[in-house]
Length: 80
Image 1 (cartoon, helix red, strand yellow):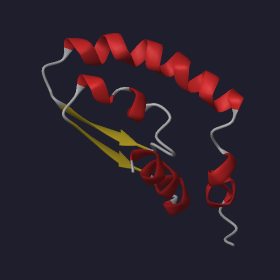
Image 2 (image 1 turned 120 degrees about the vertical axis):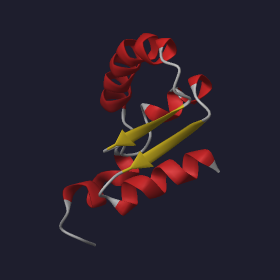
Image 3 (image 1 turned 30 degrees about the vertical axis):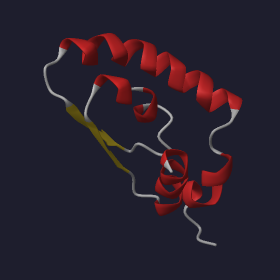
Image 4 (image 1 turned 90 degrees about the vertical axis):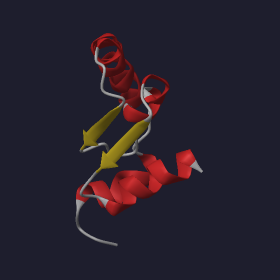
């Protein structure tokens, strides 16, 4: 295992506290995103997709990017 903190916590990142924080962010981002004509967005530092995967109904595509391959792996598991 690597010494990078997000690599180490990826599998347990989606806990109640982080899900609650994601919901606060989603509530703020959703109305803004809904007003834009762009049909895609980039989630830089998207982690496990807690935010961006909840907004996919508003766009045609999402590019989720994160420095932690483990975090992106968790997001990919959610999509498949």
